[in-house]
Length: 196
Ligand code: GLN
Image (cartoon, rainbow, N blue to C red; front, side):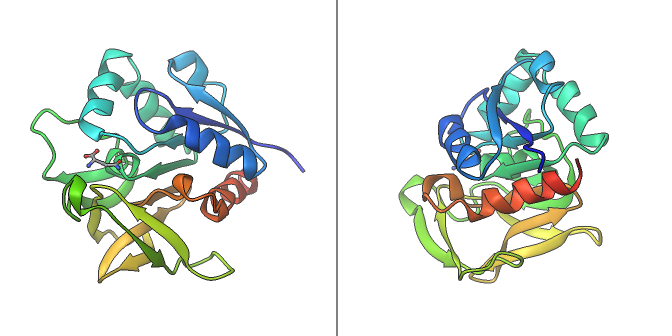
């Protein structure tokens, strides 16, 4: 079986936790900061962190266009929290100068679940993942207000969409990389493997 090489966008955010989770899910994982590094991976994870900073650094590091190009040419990408925001075709409550990459036909509301002191954990049923609900860690989390016809809702919490997939692109409002349960990462690795 081919082992995919999966990059973690390392401009800002919880990169290390994703590298560990991906390795535990049987991928080769490495940080990606520069266009040359992006060119060498089979797939990419965009971590949690702060999407406004991530967007600024993506511009500064000359990564915005290379990221958009690889997404457009079918690179599998998984975004958690700030990463979900980066993958939104349309963003609500973003900063005025904030850029997203797009990739999923969805409208995402930033900080929708409240600010830092309103962070919480909850069990989330995830379509396509067996073995019971996953533990959702929500930290100043966004939710998905609506999705287009080509995007599939994989999980909801409290009536709000918190996991979406469109083709090769996956996004969750929460942070599976912080739980030690690597089933969502394994789901993504399977997606990547299916396309190799
Ligand atoms: N609220 C943050 C943002 O706008 C996301 C928080 C997170 O990734 N935990 O990017």
